[in-house]
Amino acid sequence: MTNDSYDARGNKDASLGKDPGRPVGTGVGQVSAHEKTRGAPGEPFLIGETMSGGYGKGPDILHDCTIAVNEGEIAVIVGPNGAGKSTAMKAVFGMLDVRQGAVRLGGEDITALTPQARVAKGMAFVPQTSNIFTSMTVEENLEMGAFLRHDDISRTMEQVYELFPILREKRLQAAGELSGGQRQQVAVGRALMTQPKVLMLDEPTAGVSPIVMDELFDRIIEVARTGISILMVEQNARQALEIADKGYVLVQGRNRFTDTGKALLADPEVRKSFLGG
Image (tube, rainbow, N blue to C red):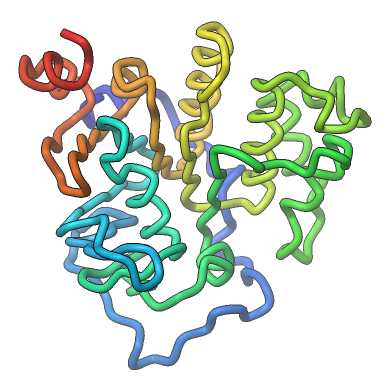
């Protein structure tokens, strides 16, 4: 989608997002003034800029890779298997060493912060697997998502139930007894309980039916309408790009194509090489 098509989504309601006037967390990950650097005026709200890095002491998987998303927009990372898609997202979230480049949130350099500290800054990450507490009820899972909060969480939980009505129905059921699509809703709902500014999703529709995939994408659009930025890795590239404001095609840890989702869908080379024609 272009910015114009985003405007057509309607008015934003930031109620699911973090209240900018409310203190966040318990001071985890505070950095000194000299460590805080600001990005250029007008840069995206979240950006992992020219990132190179890998896991531990291993070789670099990312090579000068740049991923970014604006406030209230959806950015999608696609590409072939082994392209470094999930690695790029994990780098932005602080789960691997960025040896070159930087990650900035709202203009602030957060490259050195731990994932826990980034949660306190307003980032939420939903991994592809092992993303719920199976022995806990749906409601207990949602409550766990609010572990950094010290205010009344009932309003946010009600908003999650409005977004995913089936979770209200099954709120007292063990999350491990749910279907795959319902588990994904629990995982996304728990992330939303942190009142994030950025929601990061790693393969949210993996293993679900086409009907469930369409429903999840509809809910993701609704979340973006509230002003939350969405950064998503997705194997269903064509469908993901249809809802994306910005798309990134990675190959071997490098940016191969970057454009609006609509433009990438219309690009003959992208269609032939990555979308099955």
